[in-house]
Length: 368
Ligand SMILES: C[S@@+](CC[C@H](N)C(=O)[O-])C[C@H]1O[C@@H](n2cnc3c(N)ncnc32)[C@H](O)[C@@H]1O
Image (cartoon, rainbow, N blue to C red; front, side, top):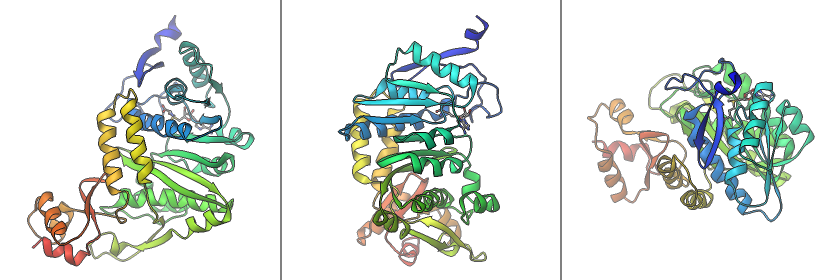
């Protein structure tokens, strides 16, 4: 009886699961709280994983093996098992005993036959088995699991990972970033984009060790986390093509302030989105029962718009302050640049941000 009172039933998508009852602050529960972790603020993150795995299963002629590697309550893997159509199975793994028991309970409650609960260290499990989709949703950094995920993932499979160590990736702790990701980070108005590109650069270099290449399908920075879905392709050709997308970028190219120049990176300078995949995800979203449909639709629209835009962005407030001009309307900037034949799009990285192929000198002129 006491055991049952510890849990409450919640519903995401069309799946009801038991999660630990707890007092949650706006930022979500802390990782030090006892019992299997559940953060309602990550619902959109889980919703997107439902879309991406449905896209993967739709495009596969063979049975698809999926793993929710760091599952806690098991909500993500249980949702995949319950909400996807097609020929697939899901392994739902967590090394915690309490988490494992809760995952088993949730699978029983949902009467799911296409999912199994596993209670192992994820790195050990990935060394023993291969999967087409590997979901890594850790406390903090995914860096400790990328090597095993790359050895485990099938050719053309997807590694999905969340990083909540955004302060490290965004230049607040440059020493930590250097030792964890082997990259020089930088705190600037575009730090969310450089952080995301550092994470992808790290995955690209780890993949290169095994003669594998990466193709980011959908990547975003939202709230307190980064999330990337990366297709892995076997072969030296793909590895070499991917590594050729790695570059260092001078900090003077990332912000207009005159601080000492440092070389930021290595950064993944290839595309962050596959436009066609993002379009197909929007179609799948339309068909699924998803509570965050509205927010996710908005996010995917922005990602689609910026899929072919150049790397990095400007913010109207940032430009106005460094050029000592009054704040113009976003619409005015867009109209002026477009009338001169430049492409300009909004970016999901910042509500006041825009990406354009116009040079900084051209942009300065429209601020006059
Ligand atoms: C942030 S929680 C996962 C949240 C979950 N994916 C969700 O969407 O609600 C991270 C989980 O990883 C588990 N974990 C951490 N290191 C692990 C490892 N090496 N192997 C297996 N599980 C691990 C922890 O016990 C914890 O439950």
